[in-house]
Amino acid sequence: MTGKRLYLLDVEGTVAPISLVSEQLFPYARAHFEPFLRQRVAEVEQKGDVIKPDDFGEGSVLWDLAMLRRENRAESDPEAPQILPDSLSELGFIGDPELAFLSPAFGTPRILQYIYWLMDRDRKSTALKSLQGKIWKAGFESGELKGTLFEDVPEALKRWSADARVAIYSSGSVEAQQLLFRHSIFGDLTAYIASYFDTRTGVKTASASYAAIAAAMNLRSDEALFLSDVVRELDAAREAGCETGLVVRPGNQPLEDAHGHSVVESFAGL
Image (cartoon, rainbow, N blue to C red; front, side, top):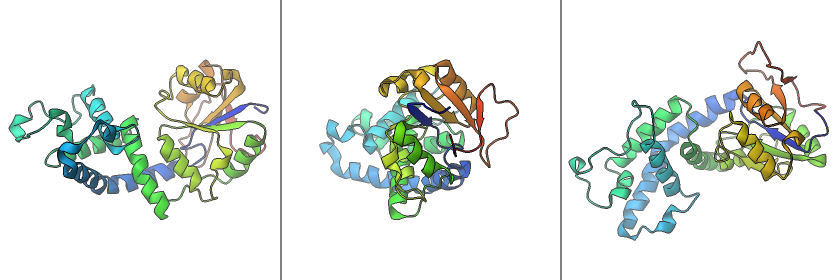
């Protein structure tokens, strides 16, 4: 496993305990989603007819909400809550129907209902992850949240980055990943990380995602080592030509079969 040019790391269950997400980050986001959205929608309502296309620029809250609406319209699960009803007239909405989902009268409750529905099912929604990242940003910057990492992570990042590159690939947004390492319990570790990838690159169970990451890093797939606690992700990375390591950490789901992947219990010496 040594001598690789890229160390590609999963986050939850690999560099950070699963409890960080399930017991800290998710509950924090859920508790803050309603005031966060109500404030942003109120700001939009105050602007009224002055909303411009630039307000929907990539990375903005409105961009995330528009993407969430598109995901909702394409939702295949018939049980999923609808952000926009079939008929707006019955709700008395007056205005541009393309902006109806931003109406505080019914838009915010419907958006929240869909967000909670996605979170309850741990759906890998790109829009949801981006919105969560914005909420976590406030939490990390205020000190309410801290990036809990395993003890062997800081030294490994320093060691690997001296002779190769380190990249993160997580279903959490790039912004959320950066916050985790910038505000870690060991201090700011972002100097050791060259790149970050999220679901905009592709789903983590598709081999094409790992090929795309290697290409983005100007490497062959076989020059990368992907470390994760999820066998399906490792299978996809191996199919793309990457070397793989199944990470075993306290709190992870026990696995009876490593499916041919090398087992990694510590980053020390790796």
